[in-house]
Image 1: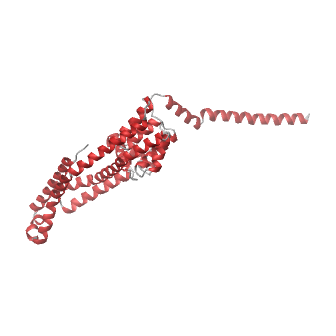
Image 2 (image 1 turned 90 degrees about the vertical axis):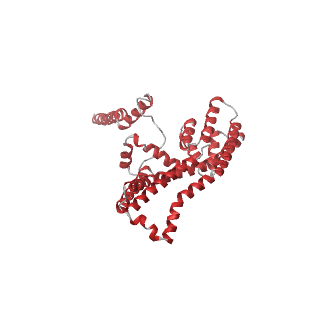
Image 3 (image 1 turned 180 degrees about the vertical axis):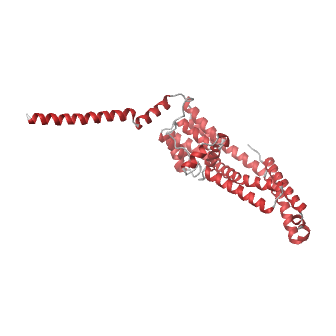
Length: 327
């Protein structure tokens, strides 16, 4: 009798433990944090694009390494164009983040205001110093971006020929992207490796190629990507199309080189006209300092110097616009 009682007690205890564990597993599976997270993702995936945010499996670029500053920058109004600034930094191939770039720009602006205050510059001089301080980081960024895009543009014909030869050899297009990333030099190879990594991660081919075109805003590359996308939809000889695009890009780059040679005289004239006032002032400061010294010893002369510097800056910008020919 005692053995039966003790056995019944043990079984009752085990059943109670299993019941409690089962209730806990049911509760955590239906109302726990993991279940809520999965349910939220399912709602976002099944909801319409206009009613819910779009889910992306790609890693989002940070505006700052500090989480709080990154959240603060992302909370700023879209009118500040921080997303466009981040895209410019990415296209320029710089390691700096948006917060670092803004910090450098603010530091230059503060230094310019301090310099204008120490020099007691008139309003035109203050405007010129502040304008130069504001334009300097953006000019450096745009020049780095233009130089990188120019190097990529020069590599595009070789990349198109490489793609065509690899496709004729029987390789798949995704493997061809990997081969281009491994064989060609930087910076184009890095972009193709990034696109291949996105495809391996699960991004559709069309979206990965469109991301490549967004990172490299070159017309020739867009033609190449459009040809690939059309071929994937309608079929055709992609190797022949890529070979034709490579020849077209080479012809356009050749024409662009000829235009640069013909516009070299205008660029030299712009340099001469921009540096001539400074050179003349330096020479006169050496041979007749008393004559030229009136410009910075007399208040009217200082004002004339500031006005002259502003006019020279405007003239340089105007001549730059004239001699730049887009093809």
